Length: 185
Image: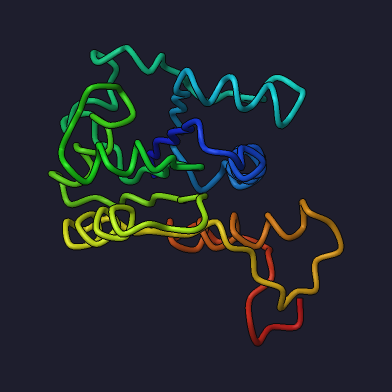
């Protein structure tokens, strides 16, 4: 599976950090991972994580590079996750505004009928946010709110965030070792 990870400037880059680690761990199930940071994401990452993002062996592209492979359906990417997804990015994607590599790659996923998952991290939602989520859902996208579950009784913030990342992996069809309701793990 070839996937694209877009990281935008919403608070919650911890989700992206954990997701990149998980994708590295389950790399055998993937043929390629491409990563794109918005400029705001770089600032938020520096503020929230205090470290540089680990890109492992993943390909990375500048958000301004509209010639990158992820900007074309012919490149054959299977899925995209925008994590975290700012409300501005959600608005642009839901209205077909492809002004950056992240938004163009998302547009490609929708036009090619491929899986597009937006991990929104905002609260509360206003009516515009909700209508944008509705529009994106009707277009075939998946809204996956960054809302941790507590069935697994997480002990740390990172463990709570992992519950969202495991949900993302499940939505992608990646077999993982995280908590599954009804299992003994």
